[in-house]
Length: 361
Image (cartoon, rainbow, N blue to C red; front, side):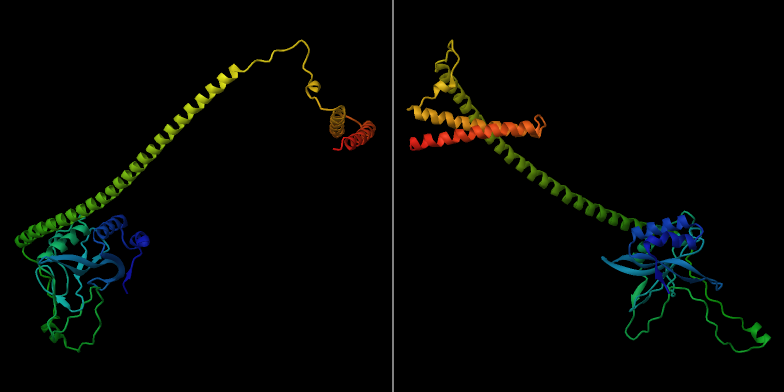
């Protein structure tokens, strides 16, 4: 049963079936890339001598251009063991409701005969064969619809071994008098007609390829044009955004310049005021901070001094703790000094409370 070949396993399959695996693989990949409707399959092929072997065949459809319309012609292309030394064996596979239309290129079995197959060389390729199929079938379609009530001839493009059938026993004289019938040889047109048909096929194929190349170029041009237009629109949007941001930057720069001028003016004003202020001249005696603070009564002066002394004792106790922490003072000296400061602070706070009671604070 025919089975399709996984594209990832095609190389290994070809290497296991053909002697010239590299040439066969390259030929198949080129043909499939140009005509993606053809896919490689592996199936059992039977030679005329009855020998069977697994071979690859390309099965699918090729385009046929007839009367301004495009049709898909199903074909099967067998690659023999000595490919590309031997030409491939090609068949037209009629679909349901269709039958073979015999002509100079296709016989009633669906076997395809082309000039490129007749003059096949090791340099020939499947692409050439398929291209000539397209040109030939576009000139003379190999299929037609079956007439109403006309039975469709069954067709199998896969060669099968001949079935053994019982035959009547005959004498030797009968066998010599009635030789077994031989199959008719395939129809081959004369060389002159082959040359004319080949030129016509090449012309049709060239026109078809030119149309295909032109449509491919136009499609790629349209795709490239759309991509470039999209890029241009994106660049225009970026340009407009940059212009808007530039306007914002210029506006911000103007605002900053105005603020800078205002700040410079304020600095000048404060500098002029600073220059106009009288300078403090130094006296012969140093400035006494305690003399600068004057209270309204001696009792208030005493309260101020006691409060300052209490705060000073707090600072002394704090720094004594820091000295003990950093091992600058031993524990015995620390406790002694703390007891002295605590006793003095107690006396200071007691006197401060009496002064505040007397001053009614």
